[in-house]
Image (tube, rainbow, N blue to C red; front, side, top):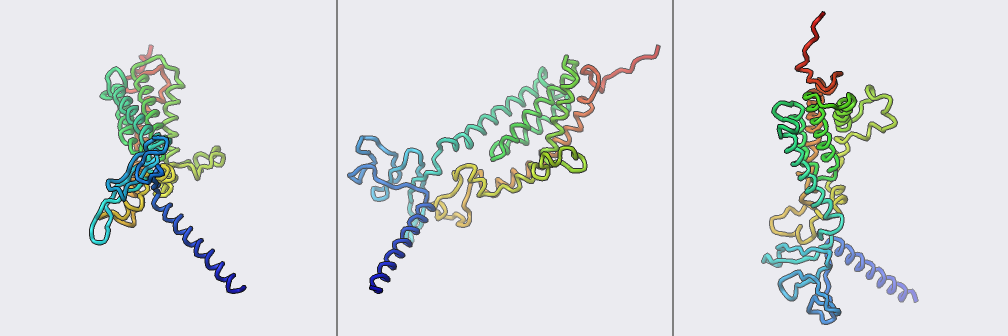
Length: 309
């Protein structure tokens, strides 16, 4: 009886190990391999629906899910490098991945170009004569890497604020009929860009420091905590290398992520944030003499003192 029990437990343990190994392999491969038909030699389903094929050789051909993508990489087979194929569900450009990777950056790039064109035109914000507009254009030019990150909203908001303060400063120079508080609002929006990037200082922002949890809100420290793993979580594992890609020829086997989640790109975006902060400080200083005037939109550099009677 004891011998039968031990044999039964051994069989169960073996099955558990085999099952865990299979699950680990499936998780690492991130692929789906199946033959859609009962004939086992075609990707045509029994209802005549044809699944996408992946693979050139019949013995390696895979039928991919319609939401997946076919991955090809050269792997070492014995002493010869041969093409390997894999259907990757995470690499399929569908759903929110399409929005995050393609649509959002595309829309923001188009909007940024339109903003710059409007700011450069003489009848717009007059970049030649308006120094605030010059700073705004530089801010937008440096904001583009943020469009290709999980903090794309920061880049979009920077472009909007840069356009607004450029319009407000041009209005102040030309005497457009805006209320005095519009210019103060534009100045405050530029000031809060600096606060948002560098973080509130307790000695200066005392009334709002604890309420806003100022120690945890600055974008520089927040984005410095972004890692390759948290990035691929945002992009739903799209930029995670599959098993055959990690075994490909001349590929670093220690690198697990690529593209927008590669370590080099994340470091580049992290450097852009302090640059954005210093640009906003410069913009704030340049805009202060224009936006903090008390007149009716006069250019403070051209104010003529009144004559005494």
